[in-house]
Length: 166
Ligand SMILES: [Cu+2]
Image (cartoon, rainbow, N blue to C red; front, side, top):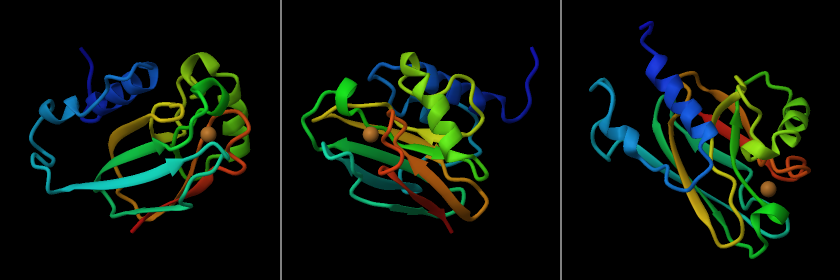
């Protein structure tokens, strides 16, 4: 079995990407070695809303480098996911956002996350009005500014912001 230090983490991310149902939560906290946080104190809670007017309520999210982030997306509208779905996709630096969004458009079967992409730091599930979803991930260890979008077709132009790691 081949593995390197980061293998497990990547595997978890892929599982998240491929798993469209609602039951992903924070199970990974109990797995893995003890190299990282084991308590709740180190976890930073961030919340952002999306609405039926195709808007996020924030264009900026902030975190410290390497912090464990629990990002909650609340869809405060009423329209269903297939009409006004929202997610939050945080992209690696250097990603061409327009190009990514075009690839996302073709990935309807994967909730508009391109299959096998390397461009995503983390993303939430796609949800419809009245729903909410949370994803937990580690902020990049390098300070910088990272773009986040909603990858539902056509939304990224309006639904876009900066994830600022300090
Ligand atoms: Cu959206």
